[in-house]
Image 1 (cartoon, rainbow, N blue to C red):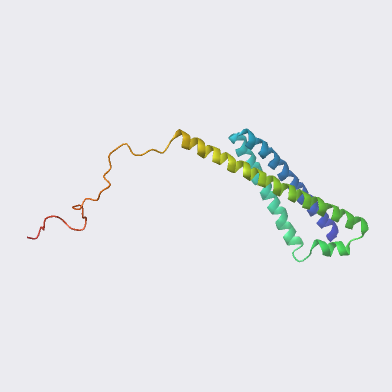
Image 2: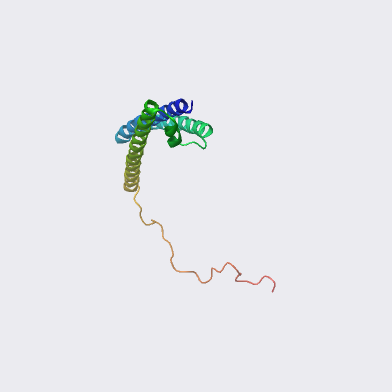
Amino acid sequence: METAQMTSLLERLLKSHEDLLALGERKTEVLKLGDMKALDVLLKEEDLQVKKLQMIEKERMLKFANVTLGDILNQSEAPEEEKLLHLQEHLVQAYGALKSRNELNQELLEQSLQYVNMSLSMVQPQSEPSTYSNTKKNPYANHSSSLFDSKA
């Protein structure tokens, strides 16, 4: 029974990671094109997918709180064990691909921000103030006391 539940859970985790990877690949293309509206839509889709993944992970923690995949592999028979190992391998590969895709997208975002900042600094150059400013301190501008003693 545990083997079937674990298999089903790993299949859903794998599907969810693959969906996130597909979204990440679409996000890379959108970032290259600079389409902010499409990026906003993708971010909303990605948020929903991450929430789905979190729900699957909560379910895994509830059903298999103190049970590891190794424990289930030790109890399962050869065909089930092979399927579980296959799912584990694909899940590790999907996770690695997702991690590298997210790193690429992060670099693209940082480059886009650098480009925007550079463009803004070119449009709005920093210049010295056009009005006169006195850099010397006025010796009479002492705010703690007045020039006249009002009590006298």
